[in-house]
Length: 249
View 1 (cartoon, rainbow, N blue to C red):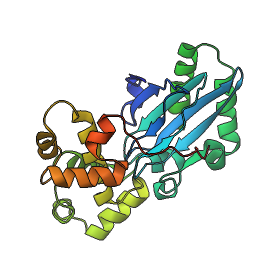
View 2: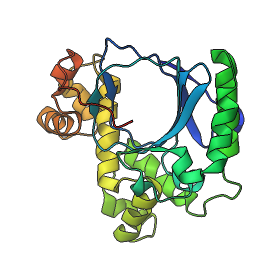
View 3: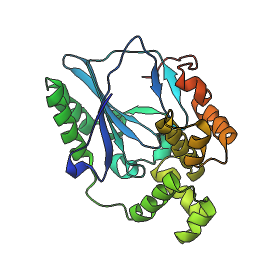
View 4: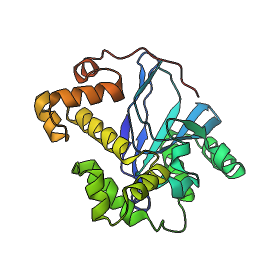
């Protein structure tokens, strides 16, 4: 995978844009992810589609595949509701053709991308499509949600304490996360912790990674990792993965 920094106009909305290098001989691993993504898949010389991939509450494993081009833009948690116009909870653990959400407008964007040749041209065209997707009006809840996302991603602040600090009820915070992020706050925090473990694997002892990632201890980390990833951290790092299942799309 080759991640790139989005163009400046996209950065408030898009965390990263990645050229996916898929291999038929290697399993396709979808990690837990609080971000919703827009994916462009080129399936033939002039054929391709745009898919909206919702937040993933747990990992999934699929047989390897090959595609001429596969580009993924991960939106920052909390912005997908404004971009796609549907509650993000409806996208959780699903991949939905953009045409189901935008009909003819999505078909025009796909046609534009399918007419491009060369990876660099497709990448530039994909960023232009992303610009066309951005909403014109700011979400009035964005500042509160951004503060909550940052806190739950880095500090391990308890949900009740976070709600009080932001002067909202726990129910309001939960409803906001479910609608805008697609995950409840506790599940969001669990996903972020597991991703921190994945990012830190090999850099320190498992016990040290557990503490740095916000767990009580190594056993707490191992249990949570196993629940979301399907295998313990040591097995995942060694490449001992769960059995693959066919992709829905």
